[in-house]
Image 1 (cartoon, rainbow, N blue to C red):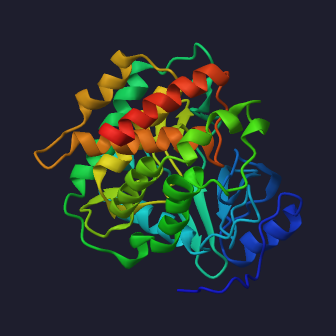
Image 2 (image 1 turned 30 degrees about the vertical axis):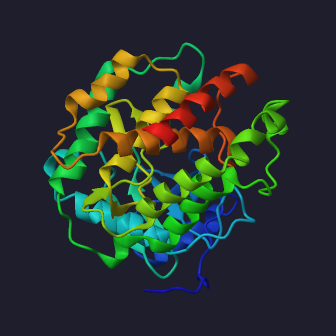
Length: 338
């Protein structure tokens, strides 16, 4: 597996001729196929993600680099694209999950490029953060069924070095459990909502909260989990297509505790102010077992809410200062008491 970043080709939206030559030279085009258009596909927080339209089809191309695409100053393990490829290759063995993920069309390990089926005109589910926007119950049912099948279809999943994802987990760990509560993190929360910086100092100065966050972080980083997780199961990884819900962007995948996965999903449903009745649907379609720890789930949900409110990875939330502080108080209670 390559570890240094010295690719033969860089994926750039303003270089359609270069991409055309790359695809042709690597036999990634069909017979007589020609590239006609190249555009950015979605936000692409972690990776460069482009849509290539040819005279016969459209495809999605992703390239990972040794930094976070949205925040180039943040280093990130370049081999995360290998984790995404391995995840897709593994879960395609499951007939239920296969319907909800894109088909892998090609994988170039040398250049850290993954080529995927394009689901066509689609958007992620970030729209649910808007005031009054509601998630459809059928989408909620699919989201629950897919993640349940993932956790239980790959129950006691054997350790796989290409899905252990240790380096990316360390980066994610810092931004969930450490940096949001670090008084010297350098984040400008007043740039998010005026007054947020001062109003949240009590959380960054709370030794008890930092202790709980450290304990949760240790669970996240431990290798004691037994379930295959998507690793970043939130509206940005849920795709709303003409054919319904689809699951994408599993580069944070690892073998870990299912309570983390569901905690993250619930945190975002709460941040999006979705009805409690809808959130309960997640539990209706999820197949719990006797090992599931509901208290741990609640603590993970609280930690995810907190980091999205006072951490670097902000969401398009339409919340004023008062609403944010109310949610932070709820998150605090969840982390401290479960």
